Structure formats: C-alpha cells, structure tokens
Amino acid sequence: MNRFIFPRAAAGVLFCLFVSCMALQAQDSVKYNDRAKKGISEVNGAIIGDSVKGLVFKKTGVKEPLEIPAIDIISVFYNPSSGITSIDVKSALGNEVKAMLPSTKQEDKLKLLESGEKDINALIAKIGGDKRLKNYLSFRVAKIKAEIALDKPETAKDAIKSLANFRLDNPNSWMTFHAIKTQAELLERSGKTDEAVLAYASIARLPGVPTEARADADFLAIRLMVRAGQIANADAKIKELDAYISPNDSRKAQVGAFKLESDFLQKKLDNFDKAAREVFNSSDEPAVRGKALNLLGEYLLGKGNVEGAFWNFLKVDTLYNQDAGEHARALYNLSLLFDSVKKDPIRARQSREKLLDPAFDGNEFQKKVKTAVDLPK
Image 1 (spheres, rainbow, N blue to C red):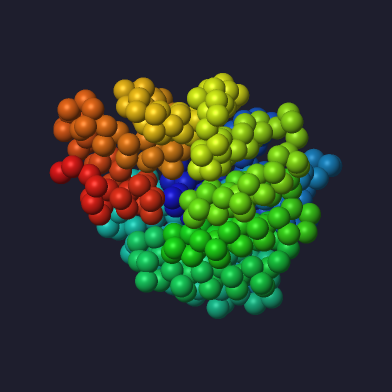
Image 2: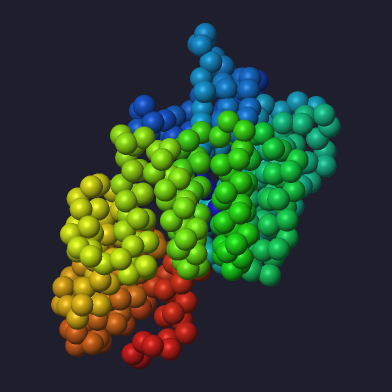
C-alpha cells in the first residue's frame, strides 16, 4: 500500500514550496498536478473558494480564477494570520517534510513523524481565529497519524478516529476526499474490509464530487469487494461504474479488467483466454495489462498449461509491474513456478524476497509468503 502523506518523490516538491513561501509571505500557494502541462505546477495568489470539488484560486496578475480539482492537489500553503508567521508554519511542518524525503533512513522516519505531530499540535494551540490554517494543520496531523500507523499498527485505531473526526468537522473541503480515502486505506490495512468499502462508498455521496474522484473510489471499493469474495456486490458496482464512465474515458479499460476478474472468480470461463487478450489490448495502462496477464496466467494454470502461465506471470514481473497488487500476484505465482516448473530454487527465493519489500506491506500475497505454509524453502 502506498504511504499516506505524499509520495517521497513529491516530498522535495513540498520542500521547495516551503522555501518559496518565504518570499511570498502575503500570498497563498498551491502545488498541484497540472493535467494540461502534464506535470507539477505552482500558483501564488489567494484561495477564494474551497469545497469537495477542490480549490478556486485567484492567481496574482490573472483576472480569471483557476479551479484546481481536489484529486490533483499536492500541497497548500495558507498565508497565516492571527500573529502566526510563515516562518512559524514552515518550522512546524519541517520534521514531517524531512521524514518523507527519499534520503531519510527508515529508522529516523518514525521519530521525525512523531516530532512533527507534536510540532504541528503546538502551533495549532497558538492559532487564534485563523480557521482555514487551523483546519489544514489538523488535516496534516491526521495524515501523520495514519503514516505512523503503518509502522505502529497499535496506533491505527487512534489514526482512524482522527481522520473520521476531521471528516465530520470539515464535510465540504478539498481535504475531505483525501481524509476519507486515507481512512479507507487504513481500515483496509487493519482488516476492516466492510468498513473500508463503506468509506469508499461515502466518497460518491459527497456533494458535487467530481466523476473522476468518484470513479477512483469505486475502483478501490471493487478491488476490496473482490478480495473479500463479495462478488455480487462487486458486480453491481462494476455495472454502476460502466454506466456513468464515458466511453471515451481511458478508465473504461479498467472496468473491463474488473469484469474479467469477476468472471474468472465466478468460473465464467467460456472464451476466457480471448477475453483476457482483448482486455490486454484495450489499454496501454500497466495496471490493466498486468491484471489481464495475471488472470490469463491463472486460467492457464487451471488448464494445466503451466509453461504458458509462467510466461504470463514473468511478463508482469518484468514489463507491467507498476501496480503493486498485480506485481505481488505475479511474484507469488513465480515463486512457485520457478521452483516446480523451471527447477530454479534461486529465482524462486528471489521472487519471495521481492515480495517482502515494504512496497508490498499489507498485501495478501506477501502475507502468504511470510507464513510460508505452501511455499518451498
């Protein structure tokens, strides 16, 4: 599962925002994924609107306001008031940012996050009537708690409660979507599948939620339902997705991939190999292709074609490994087939060792490897 606060690659981006904000003490600032430019952009000026849809931003020197979807927002700097300075904010957030830098050692990360939580809470206590800054800092605290819970599972209950409280206190903000998504991920990681599905479903009920955000949440809910064996519920959600996603939407192929998986689990296998290849060819998206190849591989295993299955799993490992869930699935199968088919125990062990990487923490196939009940030593 991905870490919650922001990808480590983006931590440097946020650090640069802190540096730039020193010269922009009288302005708000937002960094976001700019789809038009296919990269990260930063705008400076004033936030004039906030809702679950995202932020409305008045750029300095530009007449027309800019709408920034919540799903695209990386970080926000709120120009402080009530006696709080930009230096105070930068200082309070510093340890959190350091924790998420790629260069930070894992053993230092938890200490920095815990210090960061204390620093931000101390600043919140000093804030007077600056409600928007106080809300944002409370959001950051909730996200830090979720991040800490990845390394200290005993704190997950408190982190989930913190995120739930933030949602209740801020039902119509760009942060609402992110809080719900993080809460759902943490519930999933804690083994509370039904609660996680309900959390994802609540995103669709947010007032004015963008179709894209709703679809992303529905995809995550379907994945959970499939994993939990709730195939009828997954089928219903797949049909719902298929109905509201535009035929020209690139994610239409993801719907097809989930349909394929649902058919496989229900043993609707007539012309399954053809259907899997059609899904593979329907998109260049690695996650779609990875799922199609994994399902085809497992179908071929059931048919006794272990050699054909092996090569499909190997393609996922080497070419379509961008989706952690599908990569883990392929690695697990390879850990078995390298040993039983290729008679290569070294490669089998290497596949198992890959699955123990922190990138697969919480994954069902990693758990199988850790228990090692059905794997050769």
